[in-house]
Length: 151
Image 1 (tube, rainbow, N blue to C red):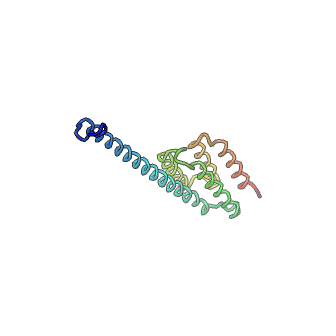
Image 2: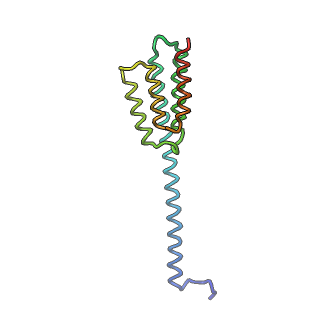
Image 3: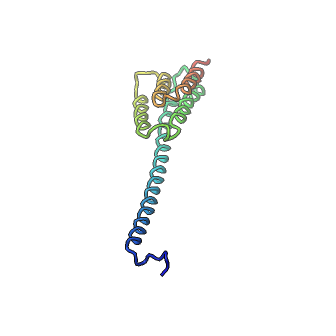
């Protein structure tokens, strides 16, 4: 019998079984974490796409005083701001994105405000969602105003 042969030692067998159990548990936890992250990334992408589709519905609400080309550019400015605001699940929670989608849906149905004001309101919403993006959103505000106010 060699010095390293513990086949008859119950304590060594028990420790080996515990080690195997720990290794298997860690592997299972790692797999669960990876699966969860994959789900989060996919869900986040789905919600971001849903927001982009909602915002694109503003193309159908073009005011008669704004050319179609300028209006589409204005809507695309807001779509870009949306995509950059909800860029990553590391930056904003899925819960907050879902809440923002509800706010966007309510704003779309709101008949009390002109469409151009709704686009500005959306940018304000995005600034609330990501205060650290405020400077970026201010730049998008200036771009939006430039598009909407140009002759």
